[in-house]
Length: 185
Image 1 (spheres, rainbow, N blue to C red):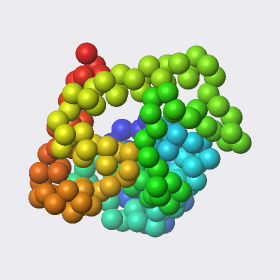
Image 2: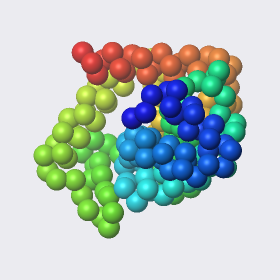
Image 3: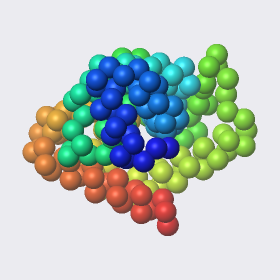
């Protein structure tokens, strides 16, 4: 992948309508964004749709990128994440988390399921995540679940939980940090 300076230049040139720069930006970043989208959406067809939408938005809004507010890849990942969450809300409005034994196979195009070895690895990862989730405090666990499984924004969480925005952001940030530490252990 290109370094941050090269990505900034590509974004700047894209903002000016340079199609070659846009193509270079796509080639340099699309594999990474696609991986982010697959992780969130767990469906190849949805991830492809979201990726296309992301780059359409990048083409339309490249001039809004502000280097002083973050790295270009972070900006692109944010666009991808929000698009994925929007797509989840649209396609799965009433989704509940399945129990470990009830988890449906992760599907890809035309219902193709993961092979058994990958499925076993996925189950181990899910079990480890569930164990780590149990170690979180009630507010942190609820905040992380609502943010990452239900797609709530921090603002929506704040309203739903009737807590200040800063408090909710802290719960999510600390919860994710504890999960990271638990999963790394």
